[in-house]
Amino acid sequence: MTLGTGDLRVLDGDRCLELLGEVAYIRVAFVRGSMPAVMPVSHLLLDGAIYFRTEPSSQLSAAAVHGLVTVQADWAEARTRRGWSVVAHGRASFVGDARELERLEAQRFEPWVLPEADGCWVRIDVHEVSGGEIASPRR
Image 1 (tube, rainbow, N blue to C red):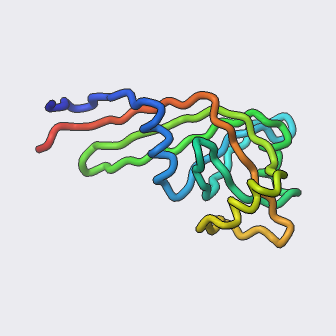
Image 2 (spheres, rainbow, N blue to C red):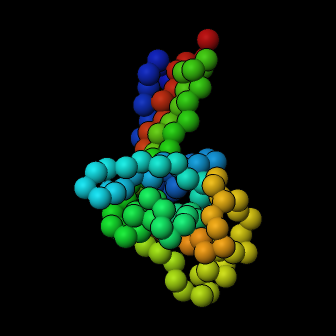
């Protein structure tokens, strides 16, 4: 199939999660106090859930305290006019289960900002995900 300039293809949920798992970082939107906040984080994607590490007292820990979050990631290449964007909505919570923590600690993962020894894991259970890919014809 040849795509025209600006053709948008809707991505299915599995492809959206796959793309979220491929990027180096995502942006997490959450409520901090009474204001919206957005912060980039490095992350893991395991069994459809998104995980990241933070300090228990960090601004980002508010995502787990308030629960509802939106995650966004994208990629674009200006030269070829191709790209994609994915948005996921879910509920964030602190990870406290010992088995789940052990599994996370066994993963190869380096947070963008290294938390102190008392760093905690936050899990986002994704409830809804959508995305699109834009493409242009080969020139």
